[in-house]
Length: 321
Picture 1 (tube, rainbow, N blue to C red):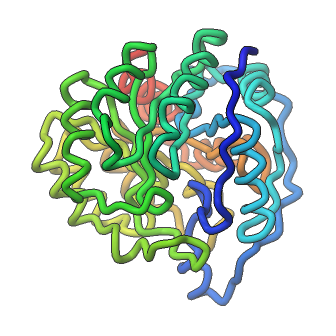
Picture 2 (cartoon, helix red, strand yellow):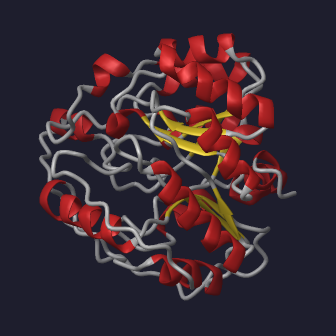
C-alpha cells in the first residue's frame, strides 16, 4: 500500500486517544498501567449479523504508531495488536467487517496535511476504509486544509480535546465547525472529560464538559457531531443532549467492553439507538478485537436497533449508505 513519507514523532507527554476512565479507575483504587486481558478472540464475525462497521479505528503512519505504542506501554496497557495500517485493514476486513472508519489527529500545527494525504491514499487503495481528516485548531489556513481534504475524498474530521489541548467551545473552533457544516461532513471529537491523567499536558476536566458541547450544538445547528466513548464520563448529560439535539451522535468505543470499572450506560441504548455507533479503538486495545462486539450482542437489542448500532448508523452518518 503506498505510504507518503512521514517522520513526525509524538512528544512523550502527548497521550493517545483512548486511555479511558483513568480518574474513575483511580476512584476504584486501580492505577495505570493496567494489564492486558488474555481473553479468547473469535476467528471472524458471527454468522447472520447485519453489516458491521467499526466506527473508531486508528490508522497512522508507522512513526506515529510507534510513539503511541511507547506511550501505552508506559502509561496505559500493553497493546494487543501492534499492527501497521495495511495489517489493521486486512485484519478487520478479513474477519467480516463491512467497513472501518479511519481516525487520526495532529498534535501540533503543520502536521494535518501530511496525515490527511496519508489517509486519503489508504482510502484510494481500499474503498471499504472511510477516512476522516484532521486539523490542528487555530493553525493558519485550517478551513482550506479541511476543504482540500474533503476534495481528496475524506468523509469527515477527527479532533481530540485532550491531545490537541482545546476546549470544544473555544473561538478557534468555529471556523472548523462552519467548514464541516458547509460541506456536510461529520465531526468526531473526543470531548468527554475522561481520561483525567497526569500524562496529558492539560486537565481535561478544565477543558471538557457537556455544557461546552451543548454550546457547540446550539451555535452550529447543522453540524453533525459525534462524541466518542459515549461521552465518558458524563453519560446522563449526553443522554439529555441526544434527546434534544438531532445532530448529535455517540460511539460506544471501549465503554461496552467490560474492561473498565464503569457500568455500561444502558439508558443510552434504550433512548437513542438510532444515534449510537459501534466502535473499538482498534488496534490500540488491551483485549480481543471482538470483545466490544460480544458485549453489545449480550444487550439483546431489538434486531433493527442492533443493526443500526452495529453498522447502519455509521454508514448513514458518513454518507456511505
